[in-house]
Image (cartoon, rainbow, N blue to C red; front, side, top):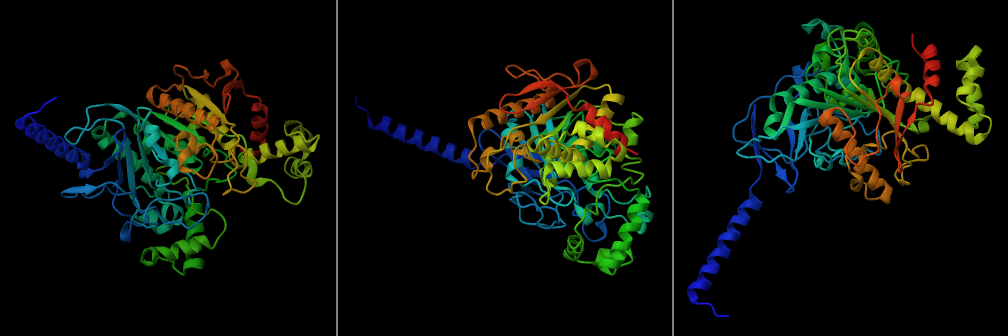
Length: 527
């Protein structure tokens, strides 16, 4: 075949032009305009991410221990391609891996992952929005953890948002002077207010990213799940979300994080400040370096700084708010993991001995009934029963109380699960974190198994993460986890025998076999 010079020249020109367009396309970054300015994100060709977006002013100086303040506007284009700093925290949990610059008081940043097409700085799509709240005992955690990356979950047709919130002494310190300077006479709960401020930001801005501000699901794990229940209870957050998902934790009759009143918290924290920081005025406390505050917090072993009944964000305990039917009555999907109790297993006695000691010490006249619910006829059975009891005491009972409270006073549907998947052996974890341990479901929810490439994941793990992502995203879309090709997940209510979806290699729904156990514990653990 012959070509003339003009044809060759034309072909060369065409290739050059095509290459130039390709270079511009590859080099051009996605942008979006929000209420504070223009953002530049990044795209992998399927999901566009915007990271490190300020949703409040840095809570430093005189803004330390104040409710979050709307962020300042900026000029030009702000890069949103890296995570913002995580909030001040010590190294507490070895399994937490971060991709941010490090701990800082300047930490109120959020992230957005969207599958929507952006055109001229905005999108015309209206996709469901899922807002994640991380766990960590209200003392640790951040959005930059690889196992909580929103990319793969967003591929299910949802916009994923995650936010940092203040932790420990920075997020939940109470003091009489703080109550006096607050217009609601409240103190503490700044971390919960940060979460609510992020939801306000979503309401104002998420449409630009292709999200529907009228279809927002909040979801979280451990302290994040406690937070979801507290957001449901708070009048401050009403109307900011339409669905809720809780993974292992509820702020109800909790043995792990019992509630204090505002005055109890203020008295205890003021005493702490005087004894451990030699500061008895708010001005002196605000003048202290952040690291000194963190060091003082780290010197004590217990979780001292956590949500309280402040009279504003939480006018009463969540238990009382739900009992009165004052909560945000939204569809709820919640549950916990089968082996939450691994942390409480004894090392100095057999499980059977430990159970009998607990029965005699804590349940006295009802010891026989306790041992019927947690049988210990042989060591294998006793090991399972003790794991169940320690899991109930740690986190399962409080989650059950939340679900039960919603079922009694709410009209919206409830879906309950138990995560039963035995985790592959993880060399970074101890023997107490075996089986379906606390937090094991996170990477399955986000489809982030590959973020832990030192684990030998099995085909059934990949199958389950695909299933869970569909369940969670279906729930975000329409308040029902069910969908084509998925095992049927019944609603959780008396009519269905309180069926629970067991999530493992062979997911199936079964009637709740342990309701009597939780009703028994209610008589001892609920005042």
